[in-house]
Length: 309
Ligand code: GLN
Image 1 (cartoon, rainbow, N blue to C red):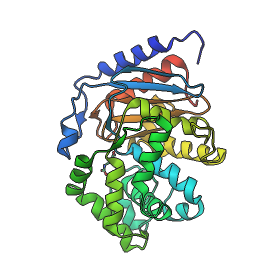
Image 2: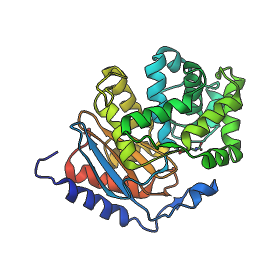
Image 3: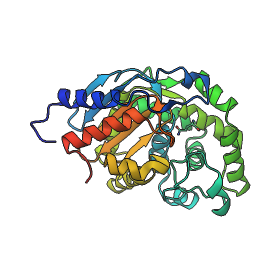
Image 4: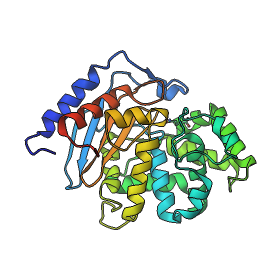
């Protein structure tokens, strides 16, 4: 970043851009706990590899991380089990379809297109469940706690139960994948783990601090190596091409950073070698990405010049 850019001014400008999206998008309403969120809430946090953390708005307020957890399960599955088996079971191509689509699974024989659509994340969760003796979601919580320093961070049991109750489509995906022999564990067990990690609540500050693992090319907050440089590079590449689903092209065009969204309204983006930034606003565009968070990140990279391009 240009040294003349002031973090406070920059984050204020991002928030102003987010607030200008007022009235656009819709809060996720497939479960009551998410539908209760105020469409106009907004927060954003920037964590640098030097250890500075800056925030604006509701940057310390916990929200439902939802599909941002898919990034964490991928990181942990690769760290625990390596690449070979995982990439035999999940692809690495953008899907061009909605995150919960069933369509490609049939023609592609139960091998999901990528780890960030629901189908792919269910397979990654299955893999992590096997690698952790049944503690996939616990491992995600522990990882977030360790990287963010926030010991209070947890799974919201009400959200997890509600996801399970309304999870017909995810159950359909999981059963279809299982019918092709691409789940090792019981469908219900894998789904329970998947809902438990989607239902974790964390703040922009917690997620930005955790995203630094990718910004530091695989190093954890305590300086130990979790991923090889090459694994971190590869995860960032998949984030750029698949992290915001069928809107990944538009997100790359506007923001120019690898990023992962969730229907709770968060987007976590990575600036390799420099920082991680997380923005949150509950109203979503038709692809399921936060309208306010995308506008804030667009402004962030436009004003700071911090993008991968
Ligand atoms: N829990 C949500 C689901 O499984 C996550 C979707 C999302 O955040 N895009 O549908």
